[in-house]
Image 1 (tube, helix red, strand yellow):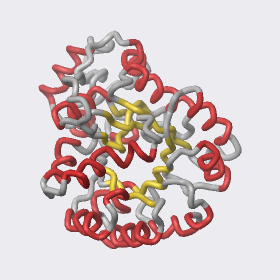
Image 2 (cartoon, rainbow, N blue to C red; image 1 turned 60 degrees about the vertical axis):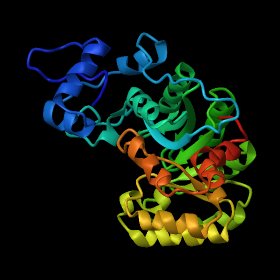
Image 3 (cartoon, rainbow, N blue to C red; image 1 turned 180 degrees about the vertical axis):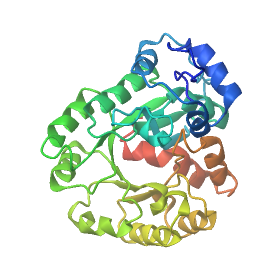
Image 4 (cartoon, rainbow, N blue to C red; image 1 turned 180 degrees about the horizontal axis):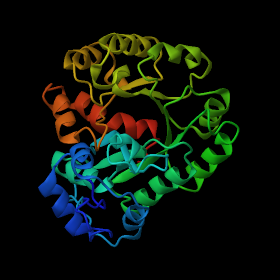
Length: 317
């Protein structure tokens, strides 16, 4: 479902009120992918304005946690809209259209997740998208923290100055990449002391090109190297890499073949495993169950579910 999107009911031309849109979208389909495919959608920056301005209800409030109880933090989720050509098309992939933070808030509340790290969905360049993430985090400071996202190809030569602004002025905490980091990016991350979550598109061996030169940067490999376990061998490569580099951490988002998740937890220090979901496309209520069901010692579970990402961010989460 997509809050802020309007089903194509023939004569409909304007955005519905957010509550009405939520009700309609739930009646039509609970899946955002199916909603876009079956009904069509209208993409508008008004969605972002609503998120940032506070004109809508917050569905993500949770009861105060007991003092001293460790927080549960999801380190991998997407939010915001895409400005790429074709992003408004009804059959576009969800990760190329929009990711509604209200969905994340609902799921996180039900799953007992206290805070979620969000970063932009696919864009060509990320100045506006990162500002959008900052706005959402400012709207829900107790529920979201943000990572910037950049593209080494389309933003080459500009990223250092942009990152300095995004970390110091916009309050973002780290960097998400889908393109191989160049020296500019790596040097900037080292200078700023921020972690890099790099999705190498199931080519874990690419990390070998820079890891030894940047031992002080904390790197996060999402999906334990293979989104939805499409290539199980990448899980093994990611585990091996983490064994050899203590600054490499594996996130658990969308690991379908859970035997490799268990293998990672068995063979690696708990400090190198981070709970993650890949919301809103992958449901955090299911992803957290993969950790809970393992019945880990309390100390290990608390590290994986939030302690580790808190440490990597210097407690600023």
